Length: 639
Image 1: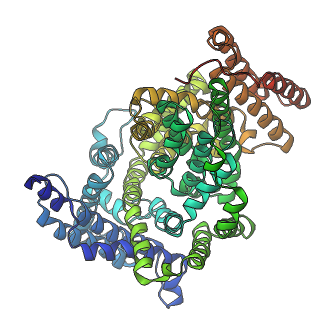
Image 2 (image 1 turned 90 degrees about the horizontal axis):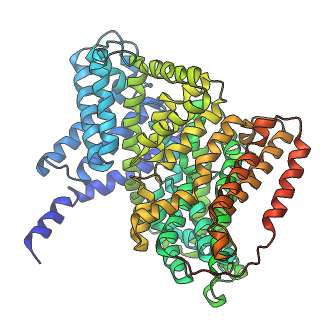
Image 3 (image 1 turned 135 degrees about the vertical axis):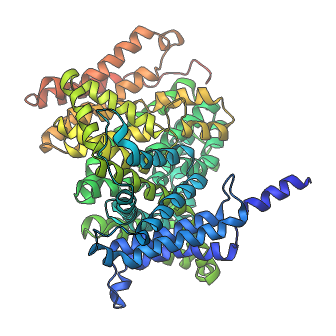
């Protein structure tokens, strides 16, 4: 073994590993303490911004210790970590006093602010990738010199000391809404996800998906859809979901006869869709609720029907593909029995019941609800394996949760820079005017296309929550000015920020899944685009017809969803035709089906709301015609 790899591993190893483990465990413990109101119970009055600043200090210090930075001497990292923790804790200690002394911007304020922001950007550079780091640094630079930019993007001239103090200590800056949500609600759900892996609940849900779908036509691909949607809604990361479930489902799909590029595409699309799937939606639902100042349950209910359509079309395409190529389900001995699976792991269903009970029935804070569910899950795990209560095991779970939170909390802190600059400079208002002018001069559709393109472009390579935060400040207000309902506007940008994970040329989700499957990455990406096509169309539908996000009377909601569902099935037929080899390649017929799908799906928009019964009947007739002849013998080999 050469000396170079050994030296490289030593450089990449965390400095002060014992301290790093303690800091990692401290991150979820701080969040748990806040959610359980421990400061008040102990007689301390702690403001939210003070708690968030303390959390920022712990996370940035940990980030600087754990991972080296290119071009930075490793021996300097402990000092950088110490300074980072000190300046953020300085802000927490002085927060109340500074609220009463806004006019004073002395060096004891602005110098720690500069150090805190620069060290935050450095920590992001090490952990979050170049794209999001450059975006945050670019907005910070824009806040300093944006007044030199020509109109319409000219910024108000802000004194540098005022800017850095605003970002450092104001609740509209870094210690604001986004980092608050991440440090409490998102933290609780990350802890719940960590416990699912540690207690065996993740394996139970995979087995449950296998028992439900494994023996059906194309069963392994359907298992991937069910398992990935379940995991994706909790863990909130497409790539992490692919790496968790794809290592099981992709080999299963390949053994069943699915080609590598199709297997990888199914996993990528299913994992990506987990973040639009209620009840948790990859934690972005909490951010949407905070921005709109509406109950979390309202966001989840509004997002339910579009998510069902997304998975309906994906399921239908998989089923038709399997029918076309004669891909059967798994052999009976390879599929766990449903009764045995439930008998073995029914305890793991209790935490989900507890979560839904506290969220939807009692209306509790989502973070507390997740903590209670995590407590029940831990109890269920201990019932199965008492060794989980050993201090070492508990500490390891807290440490793992803390380490997984580091990049997310850094991104949310960086999002505070973006939000703060947009608000203090007034550039957000300028962007709203530019987009609103596009809408007035060219119409709503061109404006939506521009907005979708910007969302996909900015989202490439960035986590979904970060994309949503940036776009909700920049783009959503312009859509609202065009009389788009606020919930539809925010879900629109959320969808297209998420779809950047599947859109070439970056298409990170497709590339990660393709690498697992040993498939051609470009072929995987194009297959994923076809499978996820509903995700690109549904947002336009719920903007034009808000009934799909429950912004209408129940009958209109029912008819709109029925039309959209039938349209989705017709679209699946156009994308994955079944029949003779010649007929399957009949392009004019497929284009006609696609046009029919668009016409049926948009019927409530272009024909109005007075003919609900007619549309319901037309939808049923179309569905009946679509389902005819499904018992077609395969005539091709899967390619």
